[in-house]
Image 1 (cartoon, each protein chain N blue to C red):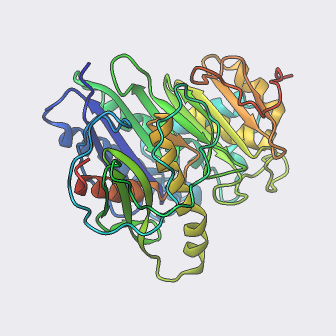
Image 2 (tube, one colour; image 1 turned 135 degrees about the horizontal axis):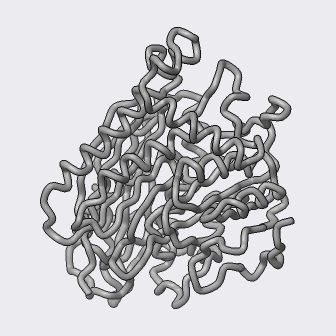
Length: 172
Length: 255
């Protein structure tokens, strides 16, 4: 069955309207596609991404496995890790860009590449609370096959946009 | 309002005219903001609150929204009460969902399989990511905000209200003071405006509020207490296969 492409737009009520449109391949299923042999754009730093194990056969709300502490030195049989940074986007409290690391068609890590919130204390506390959560949510979204999160922070739109941009740069 | 809204469409491939659809949906959101924003001094809502204009002189949407607020106040036994706010009536808790539903209407084109309008975690939706599946939405775990508490299947809208997101902003209309008897309250139902109002009311009222949600046809709720305890209405749409994680206490029926 053909999966539909996704078109996404975002706007900010009361703030500058941002309209951006992306299409992406419908599926990012683990292990579904043989890895491409694209050399890495940057050498990934040791990261706390989850290991690229297949998702559980049944979806459950249990917490994901704890991050592995090993450095990312791919074995000869593992797909090459590729990393890209998405475009810098405005979010409510400043400018951020998202970095994504993929192996094959698997996202192994999502993080903030740059964050400029003007050093404002209030935005700093929100960023500290929200950004790590968005990183986790991006990971969880992949493994639980969900299309949205309720109760999420309002910084998510900027994050999603930059993540989309980063995924585009690694060909996903 | 300072709310970031994300719109997502799932369509048949190579569908033309999607930019136009999204633009029109966004325009509806901005129109609602221009009328209802209490942050804009010159908005009709602000002028109404100040007494510069009467309800009859205001745009008709305001009267429509206030009628819905009355209905929500009745259905929640006063736990949702926009008239109990300082500064005059403030329907903001319901307007966000109302505006999102209006934007969603625009997206009902023949080739759109599914669409979601996500206003900072309150979501109005129809259809799904494919013709054979509904949308699956995770609910943030209030105790562990990097994790999901559970996943639900959407048949319409979901709204979540809680104290963890921006601090204690929930007000008890009966006392005028801040109150949040639940860590998180999620309500699913056909209309996001009403789900928003129910979720807000439930977060303030606590577990007894599950009764007024259950009494409203088509609406279901999940309440997560500060002690981590879960309670939900019988029809709450947990996504299969299992709604109860191993370490959660057994479910309890609402009073």
